[in-house]
Every structure is written in C-alpha cells, then in structure tokens.
Length: 640
Image 1 (cartoon, rainbow, N blue to C red):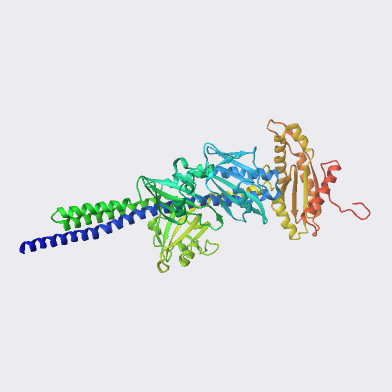
Image 2: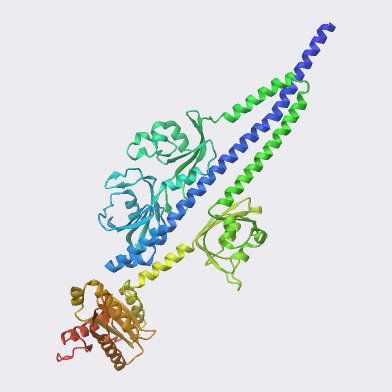
C-alpha cells in the first residue's frame, strides 16, 4: 500500500508538474505567438499602406497635370478659332510642359473627332514635336472615355503596353494613360492625353517592401503587371495568361475581399485593392500585394508550435523549468520591445524620406509633429512649430486675412471627420512668403479626440506654368502685341459698354507679299516687327493695338475727336513710310501702309465696326495705297 501510494503520489506529482509546465508554456508562448502575428501584420499593413500612398500620389500628379493642360487658356483659345497661330502657341506650350515632365512618354491633344492634333514624344528625356504621321485614335477605349467625359472629368486607363499602328511596341513600354476631357463654352472640345511610364511607379513600389519579399501587382481583370515572371504583361495579347484564368476559384476569393491573405505554390501573399479616391476621376482598381518568397502563410504558427515543443521537452529535463521559462519570457519581451522600437524607427525614416510634407495636428489644430519635407516647404523647424495653432500660424496672413477661398480644409476635417483635398492651397511660410501647395487632410481617432494628418506638396511650378500659358494665349508670338482673339476680347468689352467715343483703325502693309517673295519670309518677319515697334511708339497707354493676321493690324482708341484720330492715323502712315528695316545681311528696305478708319455709332456690333473700317481700307488701297481713308456711310442718292 505505501509503495503503491508512493508510486501514485509520484504519478500525481509528475502529472501535476507536467500540467503546470504545459500551462506555463501556453501562458507565456501564446502571447508571444500573438505578438509575433501582430508585429508581422503591422509590418504588412505599413508596407501596403505605403504602396497605396505612393500609387495615390503618382495618380494625383498625373491628374493634376492633365487638369492644368485641359483648362489652359492657350488650348481653349486654339479650340475656339483653330488658327495656325493658335496651333503654334499650343505646340510650344506642350513642348514646355514635356520638358518639365521627362517621366511622360507622350503628351497629346486629340480633337473631338478622335484625331491627334498635337503630339509630343519624349526621347531619352528630350521632348520632340511630332508633325508627321498623326493618327486617328477614335477606336481606342481611352479616347471613347475622353469623348464621353463631362467637363472637369478625368479618366485613368488600365496599365497596359503602348500600341502604335495596331501593334504592341517592342521592347515593351508599360504605360498608363490619363485623359482629361476638354470642354469649351459648354461643348466637347476633345481631350488631353498623358502617356506616363508605368515602370517608374513599379520601381517606387518595390522600395516599400523589405528584403525577402516580392512586389505583386494585378489589374482588376486579373492580368499580371508585376510578380508574375514571364506572365507579366502577357495579358496584352494572351488572356489565358491572366491570374484569373489560371486560378479562377482563388481569383473569385481575392476579388471578393478588399484586403486579405492567400497562399499560392507554398508562398504567402498579403494584398489590398486600391482605387484613386477622387470622385471626379474614373480610374481602375489595382491589387497591390507583398509576396513572401519561399514561405507559406502558416510559417509564424509553425514556428511557434516548434518553439512550444522544445520548451516543453526542456521543461521536463531541467530542474528549474519555471525559472528558465520566466527568463525566456522576459528575454522575449525585451526582444519584442526592441523590434517595436526598430519598427517605429523605420516608420520615422519612411516619414522623413517621404516626397510630401507631412504634419499631424490634434483636435485644437495644434501641431504635434512635422517631417523634414514639411519643414523645408514652410520654413519652420519642428521645435518652432510644435504646439502652435496651424490655422492661425500658416493659414492667416499677418494682417488677419484668411488664405482660403472657402472653409479651412484642416478645420473642416477636424470638425466632421471627412477627408479634405485641395489642389490649389496657400500657406504662409515662416518668412511671410505665400507658398502654393496641394493638400490632403485625413482624420484619425474618435470624434472626441480626433486628430488629422496633412500631406502637402509644392505646386508653385504648376502655378507659374499656368501663368505662362495664359500669357501665351493673349500674345502674338512674332510681334509681341495682342493676338486676334485677345484684341477682339478687349474691344468687345468697350462695345458692350456702349462707348460712342470709340474709333477703330485697320492698318495693312502695302505690297507686303513682294517683300516675302523678293527677300524671303525672314525679311517679312523683320518688317512686321519693325512696323509694330514704330507704331507702338506713337500710341498712348490705353490704346489697344493687335495683329489680326498676316500683315493686317488693328488699333482701337477712345476719348479722341474724329480730327485727332485722323491726325494719329496720318502720323502712323508717315512714320511707317520713313522707317528703315535693316535685314540680317545689312540690306535696308522701306514700306508703306494704308489705313481705314471707322467710328463706332453706338448701335452696331464689333464685327460691323470692323467691316466699316475694312471698307475704308479698301478705298485707301484702290485709291493708290499709302493713305488714310475715313468710312462715310452711303447716302440715299448713292454718294458718300
């Protein structure tokens, strides 16, 4: 009995010890397993979110550029009059923009008939204007989308390969097309098309992934864009190569969840679907994924099970299992803290190296932190800005005026929790200078403790480009005076205000064709520029002088009598006759001008007023040229 009891007691004690060890191992190992999974998921979510941020920033830049070009005055002016001078200005504007954006493979304007009117190709960073072989693109899906788009809408195509004359370009040129619909006076006027190099985005996305993982990108039809090896881009001419065709059941599972994890050929894929969130932009969905090379999704769990088995055996073999487990648990805790600290440091590095300025504000709009790019854009250091009210510091000028046309985006997001975006925002830098920015604001936290993250980017170059395009749209490229459209616009406002003291002088260079035929068009350009310089010296500041086309110019004056206007026209005629035009080879030639003068009656249109001046010019030409004629209405007896 005692022997049995002692054996029974030993059995009970051994069993109790075994149970105790198992319980201790479970209690210590299971939180470690959970923390490992949590750390792994934090890393994965960080990587996927960073890829989404990179993709959104990439598409945002493309759509912003397309919007600027589609709304540019030089393009709008060309669509209205379709003149050769307007086309020349538009081509120059496209070349200028292509020079600022070497990452664009092509920059085109396609009219509403689907025909390329302006096309600039980028060859090794050098923009080149294509004037021969412009194509009809009406059959392409992105052109159909652009023609169907409403004013202000933008269409982003799927990622595919560039196609020229119905054939895929070799070597492959991965491309994404951004199409901005152009509307002029409420009517469809065609579209602006940007062809961007998709490989640049893929290269940026790969920098977001750690060693031992691969980038995987699929389009919303299951076509391999990256990560498929030989299957990458094969969907362009072989639909059977798609992921969706090779693994239909798995594709249905992946397509049905916004984010998740799946295993394929003993490798683990963590993915997230991404679509650009601007409601006016139609864009495709992309699957962004991180593939762990050579490792299944259960690797973390299997590793934890192995560790638990080793610890159980060790606990049975050693004298003080609880002490050893306690020490191991504390060591693991310290390691996890170090890993968390390293992950936090990595997140700081990613934030500091971001191409956008990033700021965080609390519920009272007080700055909590700012990254180095934000410090560079605003001129404030983090130490100077932390704790300050961002709205009062950077959104209000020293004299108390708000820089917002409407509600402050940051305050709106903090109050409502809704994301805000502004493509043309302004902030006051530390030196008092106004900085032009694009801004995205996203809220985080519960409504009672809501904060916000601001992402800002410098758009000063876009503002300057838009200003230059406006200047190009109003100026004659050769002479520097107002072009026809700008001259008509200014004088139309005078006519609309019923300005009865308005006179128009139409001037035409006599025998100008002889100059071009005898000395060449370069000489003709010199004559036109000398003529404009000579006439401009005789005008007042408020007189409006412009080139209607060719060698024909127009001058509009106000607040003069008829006699004074005729004296001015005669002075111009004499000055032009006396001027010498010196050509590049040293030759000097002279030329004369004929002038037709008409007075605004107060009841006619600008077109009718110009017709009167043209009739007077016709009389001057047929009376021997080099003279001034004033328009006189025909009386009932047929005389003037």
